[in-house]
Length: 80
Ligand SMILES: [Zn+2]
Image 1 (cartoon, rainbow, N blue to C red):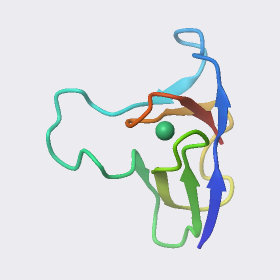
Image 2: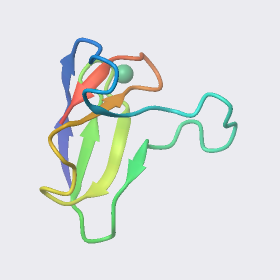
Image 3: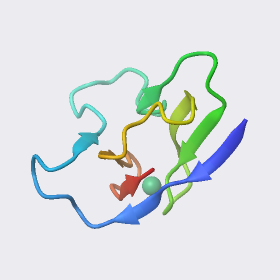
Image 4: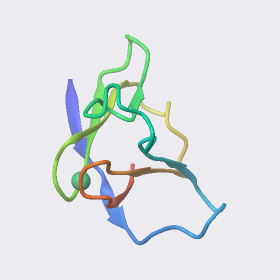
């Protein structure tokens, strides 16, 4: 398993990037990763600010470059 820290970026312009964020009204799995890949992936992405797990088990190239993850813990925007 390879751990990669996301790069912190400013809040993207609405609609310009594909943003994954935690569902505010969801009580279940609140501390889980935002995205889980398939079982062949061996990359994990961590928040570049606070270090929590954002993306679990993804393969190289599985996440498109326009994807941004908003950390559910510190709300930072992470580019992969
Ligand atoms: Zn964070």
